[in-house]
Image (cartoon, rainbow, N blue to C red; front, side, top):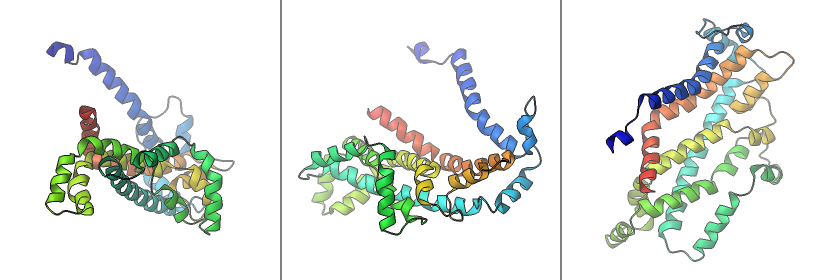
Length: 277
């Protein structure tokens, strides 16, 4: 049995090749970001970093067509706000759907699941008209508010809470005099922390990389998100690929940083969910 579950040399070789193929595009992006645009046409392509990274970064932030620094700040504000909101409301609603006795609970859950079946593109026009009515076009609330709660997050937390949170523990807390809010904060939320970390990472990545909705409502070139700044860099007859790759590399760093800081909790949450399943 131990031999059956032990990894052989072929398994390690396949994992090494898969890891190399996954990491190499990211590595080569940083290589091109540290060189001039001529590196794109070199045969064979360069695989070692150059010495132009500092100059490329300086030119990137001095580019008045992209407003890259503004895009980074706006994306950080939007991504952090949306992530905190989605995690908070999803854990709160998931706890309510899983453990509280609510009239019409199953019907409301079906409505939430139904929202997940509607393509995002179908909601662009109604949302755009609503943002126009609220006079939020070209402002960050137009990007933040529609994403504050997601059906996927509520459904995910509901499924996890139904297994991770003990009903007996909630009843014991009520007998000790705890209200619903205190039960959520002191009992439910710590139990949902692994799944909340996974949801937070997915939400942050999705919000940071979102292009369609910010492109629809943020028409002011001086107030972009980072994805709109990258689009501005790639527009035009002549594309400075060193700047494009430099901007892409800088825009990727927050995602890598989040995964490095919270990777252990995220992997632990995934593994714990797999064991519970």
